[in-house]
Image (cartoon, rainbow, N blue to C red; front, side, top):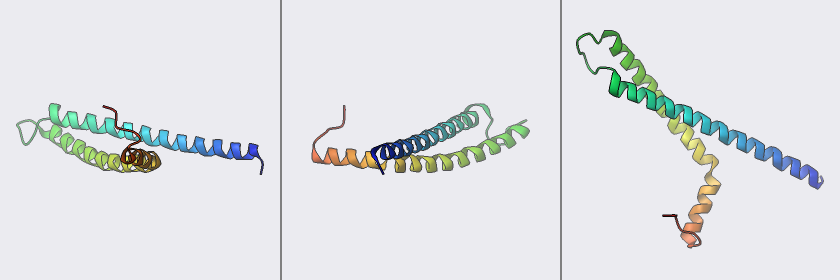
Length: 106
């Protein structure tokens, strides 16, 4: 194994890490958008309860609420994955702050 093999392996690993992190970030963004849209639609546009004439809108409200809840669960899971992928950076920063070598920016 020579230096060029080590460099090639490192670049391949970095590309995989970068690709994985980008994919996780994109999924998190899409899920956040779904949460925002379904939350705003349910909150602002669709009538609550059994108001007169709410028939199909009431069904839509329940469907959007189900999508919102499923999206929330998936969003929490993807954020957990995001934190797991960045755990080394997080722990390094915590150690630096505890050691007093850096302080949080104000």
